[in-house]
Each structure stands twice: as C-alpha cells, then as structure tokens.
Length: 178
Image (cartoon, rainbow, N blue to C red):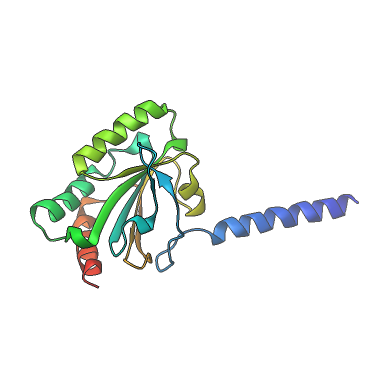
C-alpha cells in the first residue's frame, strides 16, 4: 500500500512539473492571450492593439527602474528620431503586484508616474498570472517582444545591457515593416 501511494504521489508531482514546464513562453511560440485591467478598471488584451508589434514590460514594482535606459532608448527611437513607427508599435507595462511588499496604492502611484513618463498604458497582474503561465522570473523585470501575429520574437529577463538597445530597436523596426 505504501508503495502504491508513493508511486501515485511521485506520478502526480512529475506530471505537475512537466505541465508547468510546457507552459513556459519561448521565442517562436504564439503568446497565450491574457486580460488585465488598468488603474481605471478598463480591461485590455493583446488584441487591444491589433496590427501592432508589442513590447510587453512585465515588472516587479521593486525593479521598476531596472530598464529605464532601455525604455528611454525605445522612447527616443519612437518619439524623437521617428525610427519606430507608432502606427505599428505599442510598448506598455504589466505590473506583477504579487511580487512586492508594496501596497496597491503605492504601486498605482509608481505605475502612474511611469505611464506619464513614457506616455503608455500600465496594466495590473494581481495574481502573477503571466509570471506563472509564461515562466517569467519572480522579483524581476522581463521584456517580451511579440509581432503583429502575437508570435514571440524576443524575451529579455532582468536588466537589458545598453549594448543590446540598438539590436532590439532594429528588431522592432523590422517587425513593424512585415
């Protein structure tokens, strides 16, 4: 009997592990859809921006400044240099509120400041849905680039080195022209 219980328990753990591994987001996969709200409780999905290449910043509020240099470079390429066509590109943030000790009110203030600085949309993931389903690291800052068909073209976890900024900008420019 003990052997049967052990075998069943081991099998369940193995199946759970394998299922969780299969869900991890990878380059070349179609990004699974999601629905999140902004501060005004308006719901958004990836299809809220049809026909646009998306730069999805998935952020632990404790790491909200980690990729400011990267986002400044994207902002400059979009708004100043006009190298990235805004008609075909949208960058936005999703806050992983479960990864922080900060209260929701403070998170909304921080997110509001970022939204104003980058003239963008900030959404809230209260249950760490994408962190779990997409296999993104906890307590970090991830950037996912998806093309117009929602195929993942790049995933960056943690701090993006400044030496990568131009490479990512060129990727986005190329994707907007497809």
